Length: 129
Image (cartoon, rainbow, N blue to C red; front, top):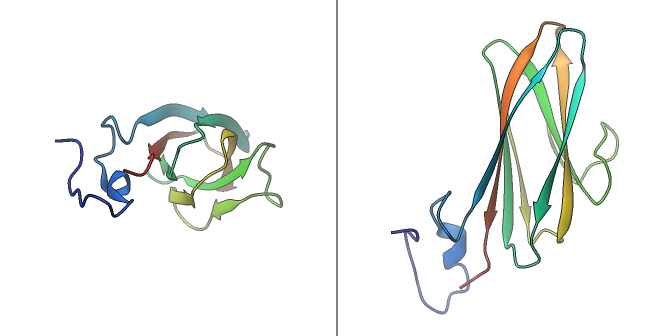
C-alpha cells in the first residue's frame, strides 16, 4: 500500500503517504563539493497541489555541510525560507503548503576544504485526500 494510514475526510492522509509512492514522489540528487568549492546549487520543481515539501541532505562521513531552501530565487546564507545548519551533514527542511514553482536549494560547506559527496532528496506530499 502507498498510504500507511487513511482516515477519510481528515484532509491529511496524503501527508502520511509512503515516500516514493504515488502520493509522495521523491526526487533525488547526487552531488559533490570539490576541494576548495564552498557551495552547490540545485532547483526542485514543486507542483501547485503539494501539501508538504521535505528536503533532506545527507553528506559523506566527516563532512560538514549545511542546507538552505528558498522559493523563486536562489537561496543564500542570508536569504532563505528554511535553513538547517550546524555540525555534521545530515539536515532537513520541511515546508508546509509550499508555493508552486522552483524551490532553490543551496548546499554550503560549514567547515573544512576536502572534497565532500552528498545526496539530496526532495519528497513532495500531497495533494490532501
